[in-house]
Image (tube, rainbow, N blue to C red; front, side, top):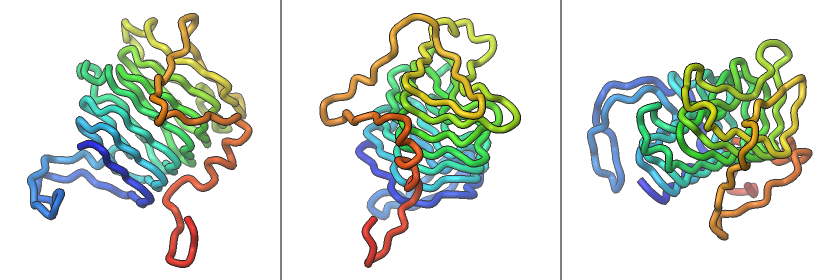
Length: 238
């Protein structure tokens, strides 16, 4: 799939399903294989914009970007009440995901999110101007030499439990080649970010039409206040 917008939807309580028939594009009935219970799963997709959705309490994860998917923007969403939130990259053996590029911006994570905000394999993620309202295991992690630019996010650690924002897969022999960088992030309640020592901060390399201004972290609370599905009606302006 390409050139898709997923906008202003509430998605919750998704369950694993056996193979079956579903309604596809243009009203065509198609066969689909088993699903794990993810709210949104991108497979070999590109030029995808996921914006202003409220997503929570699904059996597996809330959002998977996998199997060569790239050029994905995830913005203004509210993710809450979930163990595994966002997966970028299929598995440690799927090398094709090294070309993945994802932008995660203006989202609200929490309350009651455990991990994977996101978890990155191989590819590149620009994570900017997001609000992290606690976590249980970690906020951002990954494996297989991912590149991350975390920029002007507000990380509010939980009152008890892990204060560390980042996680790296134990036993990964490529761990020293990771590029995890924090730029102008803010940390509250003892939160801290383990950065890659040395090296250069990876750039998103946006084209002119893709670029956006990353604002000062002081504005993150107000920026993310309207995250989630919009409250619209015929008489109101969204």
